[in-house]
Length: 175
Length: 432
Image 1: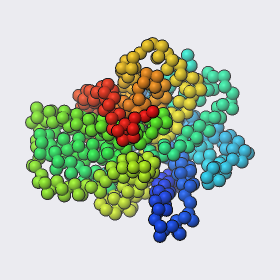
Image 2: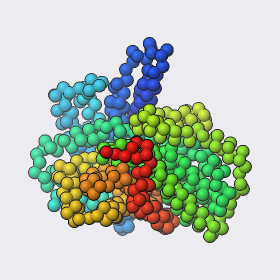
Image 3: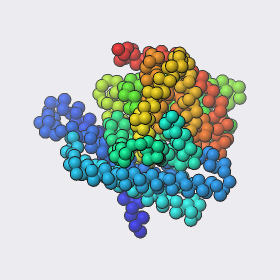
Image 4: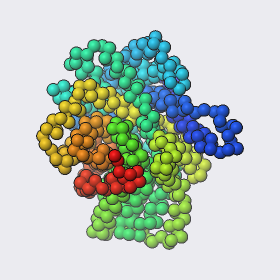
């Protein structure tokens, strides 16, 4: 039940960040060109899109951090597995589990470093240049995304130990 | 010395089969924690880099290009481009195969990624070719190789990454890719034609001029993206990232409202797919930036550059060395991490030897194309084997002859810099 809700939340966030970033930049471009149209001038001059680039970058960073966690679940993070595949089944199982554990370990360390960094930025009271948003909220993407990714690695590891199946991404699934 | 430890560590971690991004990140952590004498404070730079590494508007062209590619592939643009290409070259020997190569070239001009091109064109063309009795090996080889045009013909995700990591103009790189892209497409068409003549592959009935025109008008909505992206960037209307965002919105409108092949219900799924793919790329990019930050703090690019120059290599020998190294790197790693790690290593030497950075960028891009069709880590091969339901070993054999064709074009472009530099120098003026 908890996992189901987490899955939906993750998918919803990732897709919305993508759509929002696209829309923001598209509107900013549209706005820049509409400034040249004289009869639109009274309406457009009041709006400013100087913050668009910054917002787009932040949206995509959040998208990237949570999307990377989603990617663990869909098996899109590829590695060089040619050698491992040639090994006998038992050793292969060992290396698959080792890789997943390494992923969990790395994301765990990054999540911890991320928390320390967020606390540091919080105390420094830094704000972003255009949006004037507190930077610690923006940087929260690192510990949150990395923790979720760590959880996903552990989830896949447990699933692999139980069923021997790994998620695998199929590129042909587009159509 | 530290260079050997760093790359040795990376190599060992890669061989365990863990994701490339994780291997890059762990190498940095392990080196900082175990080998270097840096304090823990420096380690917390790691978490900062994981964020600030991406804090760059130019990189954001990548998710936008991925999104626009997804809309184009699912929204019916690919199918119409294939129909147009078929009316143009279908009547020749091996008509369907020729059309496949040409469709890949057209699709490459509106999409920035190779695997996306393979999927978009291959998922339609592969079944069609097999049905017409083309040998499976030949069909898969043609599609996997032509799909590589996706990163050479602008727009190109790989060029965006090269531009970001070397601070070169992305617009200039895009323009520089046009002529080499056309040369590569012509070479692939020529080889396909010769093979088709030898094996007497079937031809299709010749299309009337009227049919060609109708197919063109139908495909024009999708093809117009070439004008939006290249015209927009060259004309100074948009930055490359803005062009990518505009093309994503344009592709969405074409897919949903003009071709009406992408129902509203499918839009969230398309967004999620594009986000999944771009998050994977961005995650690799973040970790590769971290890795290359470690190389820089350890002074490795400078040391390597000095060493290479002290060997007294002439420019052509250096370029040969670059090609060989990239060929092997391309076999093991994924393009964006290779570019982010190696471009800063090559650039100082290239500059000293008087090699144009734009030229180097095109050489690296073609090498990435080659890497995508060479085992063991050839992304295009994986994609094609998925589409053809063939084992990876068989697909590898199928692509083998094509590696020679791409290598021939690579050497041509490497040693005739004018192929890459003529057009950008003509349009933007010679640098300096």
